[in-house]
Length: 345
Length: 275
Ligand SMILES: Nc1ncnc2c1ncn2[C@@H]1O[C@H](COP(=O)(O)OP(=O)(O)O)[C@@H](O)[C@H]1O
Ligand SMILES: [Mg+2]
Image (cartoon, rainbow over all chains, first blue to last red; front, side):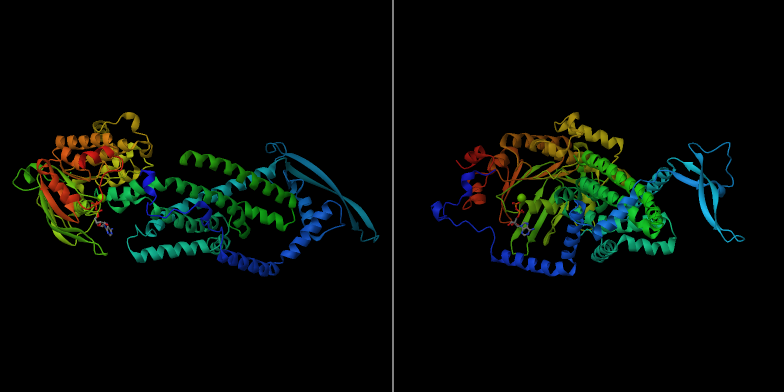
């Protein structure tokens, strides 16, 4: 540490503090920039109908507190939300469609329910509508649907895990090639960085749609799509951290005759490891959420179930699915926060 | 381990390190090394002394090829330094750095073992699982530099400056180098610790018969520890001889007309040198 007195130059003229010039917190350039950004936002607000959004939201809010009869948003969302409850927990299947069912040895937890429905049918001779009582027997599993959603969620989680593994495995070589100070050749650097940007710029939903064409419906397209997209993120972040790692220990090991890969392992990895853990956990978290979405295009997991029920207007089932997704993401969040604290601290 | 037998390369028959007409120019025209020639015999503790900017770091870094030369040759024993021999030379030379240059987040044990990073089998390096004989050696050198078992799992960043430099020396010693380059190894330490560290460096080098090229900017430390002093200024060798001959005139030739160069942490040293 230097003596603090040495820091002030003795040659500097001494001005009394009342004549000091205190720089303004912002200058005209900053003000102009704010003005321009404001104008651009006003222009854009019309294009995206911010006014309409506010009006409809306001109406919905007023309708909620009873100040207004009804609102468009309230009606649409209300119908939807109302239909989500009660959550569908049980699973029922028509016994008639289960030819192998042994009534004396029902599967565990299940029971058979008989439901009578009355239908009116035209009697061909009397030409009168007559009531016909129909009996249908259902095999009911009291929490069968919850189990099914749980199973789908596990599948979704598996998709997310494998997508993360694929992303990590792809991005390690991409990061080494794409780190300016470790790339074997500038051309490889450019190639790697371009590929990483490309992967990142492709929305996973679109990649999944294409992959479904090649690999068929199911989880393969799902984890490949998420893995490729994730490599677009991790490849970039991993590479940037390699580039900005402290050079001195790297040089110290280079001076001992170590090659690049060994220096990466011994001098760079310990430096970047905490950040890598954080990025990777973020990608895993993102993959769980996105794995639920890409099922919409048939790439496996809970999204596929969600889309099916949504299209059949079975909103109670949709509600169960949304609840399970939320719980999973919430639990994962807690776990990953702990893992992070453990590995980084 | 591929290393020449020091007995063959030294002993007055042939210098251990030999610099001939070294030149290093930087693009801005600075000549960091300007026709530097001298020899270092086997086992000598040779101090390169000079004020900041005199070319000490450039000289030391040219020995293990961290700095490229614009002219001149460096020989280490029989081997002339070139692209082809660089790897081999680096494995025989270890370096101790001014700012320690440890991997701060890694443990002391990992830092010392990284001294073998060029020698251990690749898979072991990548798994971080070094062979038993190296692990045993790591413990032995750590003990030699004055650290304890409790320090093994500790992060390097959690040690004091003096302890970090001890780890730096342990890392350098791990593979029994024939030459130790120490670039201002005590510049960021206080005077008392500086003496401890330089004593340690001199002693461990003697025990192993290693040749040391140690740059310093404090004349008192140079006199105290050097078997020999090579004084540099503006990239040129201004003095070359035993500490006994490093008199006021020689010192003035290195430092006059320049602001006093002392470690800011060492006001005592300043008074002694410039009384
Ligand atoms: N990378 C570099 N680029 C330009 N000039 C440099 C560079 N490294 C060192 N120099 C210059 O070379 C001269 C010698 O530097 P250096 O060897 O670091 O001196 P010392 O270690 O004795 O302080 C100084 O004038 C320094 O400014
Ligand atoms: Mg220096």
